[in-house]
Image 1: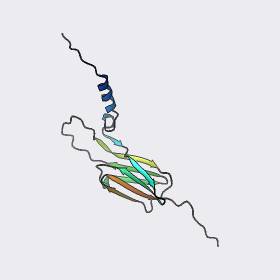
Image 2: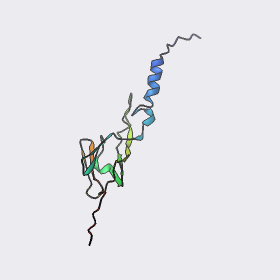
Image 3: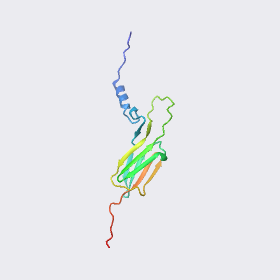
Image 4: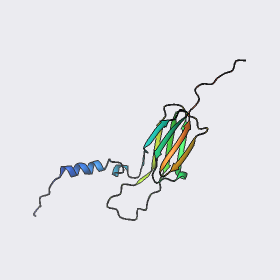
Length: 134
């Protein structure tokens, strides 16, 4: 029985192995991703901008506690009836817990989703309370 010579390409093997761990690769298929965020301070508020592409506002859950914010979002999966050569956009949603630099309050907080970017504005918790002497 004749055997042909198979050329080994180490770069291809490494690339294939890295694809398993890359964002959207096989190791993350069907899992939850952490959204990218920007956090800024405008003196009175902490403002978080989070990338949530393909998410409907009804599918977002935001929990605020002292100096922590948790953002959870579900995504609808596309039909898997078609045969793909490569499918990297298979994830169930986003989840991220963010520790803020200061304590915030949910009173007066707001959130808006526009063009796949979630903007959460959280008022800072007042540090000082003045007491009037009687």
